[in-house]
Image (cartoon, rainbow, N blue to C red; front, side):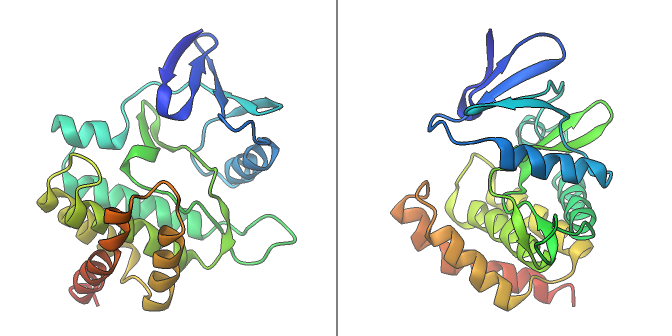
Amino acid sequence: MELIASGRDAWALDAERVLRRYRNGRDMDREASVMRHAAAHGYPVPWVYGTEPGAMVLERLYGPTMLASLLAGSMAAAAAGTMLGDLLVRLGSIPAPAPAGGSLLHLDLHPDNVVLADGGPVVIDWSNATSGPSTLDVATSALILAEVAVGGLVDVPAATARELLQALLRVTGPADPVQLQAAIAARTANPTLRAAEKSNLPTAAALVLHAAGHHR
């Protein structure tokens, strides 16, 4: 098998399918169920062929991630932010699977989790998906973009990240301050964030609120 995404442990099975495996061997049925629910509501996700213990067989997507396109200069920040905002708005209109209330949430929707496939953008990596107010998804995505702007989580220029953030908020409206605090708490509890990155969260949150102030 061909390894096509080491960070996500995705292996190409053939021209149409990939095998995604978690290193901790976690059950994939929940994530597969969420993706099928999103697809049933017309949301752009990879087709799920099936699951097996610790793994999931998905549609193989062709195209760069939004992040790769930004870094290559083939996609403008304003266009990327607008696309992210549209994806968040569309997702916020999907009810969470019963019996949960609220909307379906991705909670990790950022440029590296959007593949620019031939048929349009496709959202990947639904491992954090849950239910709740759609404003929490907006706040989380805005906070992640602001973290890039203030802390350099990836090799995206700060000005580009700010433009992404502003374009996103033009579509979604301002980030809700209460949900922004919830997003901060979740990011603080994230074990993959280093201490220095967590220390930047208050500055990132302030940037989100400042950017939101321009779009009221």
